[in-house]
Image 1 (tube, rainbow, N blue to C red):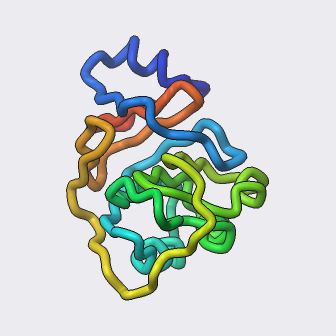
Image 2 (image 1 turned 90 degrees about the vertical axis):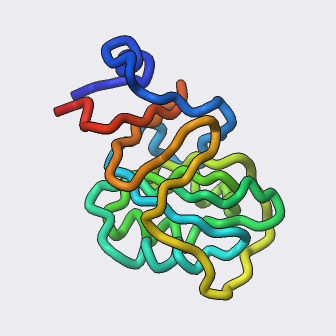
Length: 159
C-alpha cells in the first residue's frame, strides 16, 4: 500500500508527529515498521548489537541525547542493518559516512553528520521508552517516516 505521512495524519488524527528536526541520509526515503528503542550517549555498542541481529522490518529509534560530537551510525553498521532486514533508523544524534549511507537501501534520519566515531564502552539500554522531538517512542509502536516527517502510532496504520 502506498502511503505518505500527510495522508496518515489526515486519516488518523490521533498519531504523534515528531518535530521537524531530522535530515534524510539513507537512499530509502519512506520507511515504516515496529519500533525498537536504544538509549545511548556517544557509545554505539548497543546499536551494533541490534544491527547484528534480525531486523524483521523494524525501525530502530536511537536516543543519543542530541549529541553532535560523535556519530552513532556509519556505513558499516548501516550495511549490516540492510543485510539483516532493518527498515530504518531514526537517531537523535549524528551519522557519518554520508556518501555511503546515501547509497544504502535503508531509511536513515538523524540530526546531522559528524565525522567522529563513538567510544565503545558497552553502555546503553534497549527497549526503554524514549522521548525526543516532542514524541514518546515506545517499543512495539509503529513508526512511519518520509520526506514530510515522522509519525508514530500505537497500531499498524496500514493493516
